Image (cartoon, rainbow, N blue to C red; front, side, top):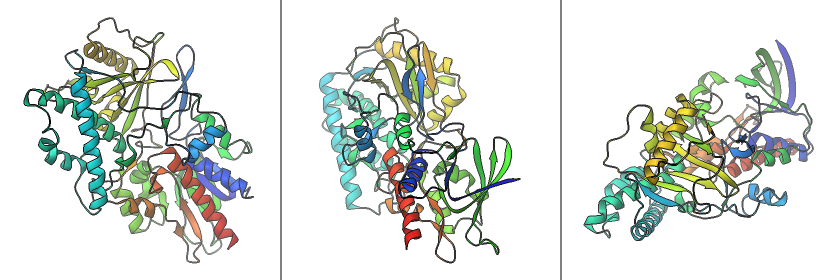
Length: 469
């Protein structure tokens, strides 16, 4: 079995791992390697070309949340990667009903206002009762009669359908149903800011900027870590041994320090066999308690757009009392919107969450495109809607190197639990032998690219501080 070594080995070439390496290099530490299980960099950032004009679309991370306080935004701005009209409005769009008619504009405005007020109430509740074990679903179910009380009886059913459709905006926070999302730690306080940006040339351009000073051999692709042996050894007290499979061959890497950016979904499934000795009980409990959402995208490319550009796309208001579609169409009721990208003229993107997200991974992309076309024809009441010329669906739920999308706080957990997940594994001398980065370890900005970036900087600085003390 071949063996290589480095002072610091980083597991994962996503934004957390690449940022950690970049920070170490900038601090003067050069003996660093990144081991990446995939045959590409990026992790949950995955920019691909689509369609005849090879436009850049994102199978993974889409948004830069916020402005100057966000390091990803600042970096994108510095390198002129933002473009011009890339600000995202969550509520924009043409709202259509299942029977092919448009939603009444006055009623829609009223329900959106009620929805925003309800979310504000949920945020206020979370600040006032941080120990509540209620889920968001339990809170909403108990208060629904009061929430819709301003609506007249004759419009109440349609208002309920609109409200239930808008709940998909909140499902984005946890990547699934609201039955598991903690009410006391819901993370909704920033949901309706309208300054979420995209990168027209793709998120991978940002990664390339971070890697501009990397040597060619820093990243080892197709190198999957199978075991992290952090035991204290008689002849090598300070070493961590990583047993890997590199392009089909067994390989051992030895490091003085390891920074793991392994996603929470993979830790949930594999931590028992991944770490030797086993992780401390507290860390195992955190991994098992925290939530990891299921999210996928459907990206539809058309030769020419059939929708009016600039309207924000097409929102679907499903009849909640109607019978659900059966068979391989059942997932379609999980689609709330076909969103347009302002910098791409002929692409619509649909997000899908929970069980529906996992279900579409077993369905061929051609069938997904057929069902989406049927849905669009139905809601727009227009049989002339064309089929897309290209379609791609992401497959994050069954991707063995991710097993989900991003972290959320479940009922019974707290933001502090995410912060504690970042605590390193120390040897008996207090040395941080295994450190943890990635979006799941940032208590303020989990489930985001900038949270991942900040976590990589944090762990690199932890190493530098330990070395200089």
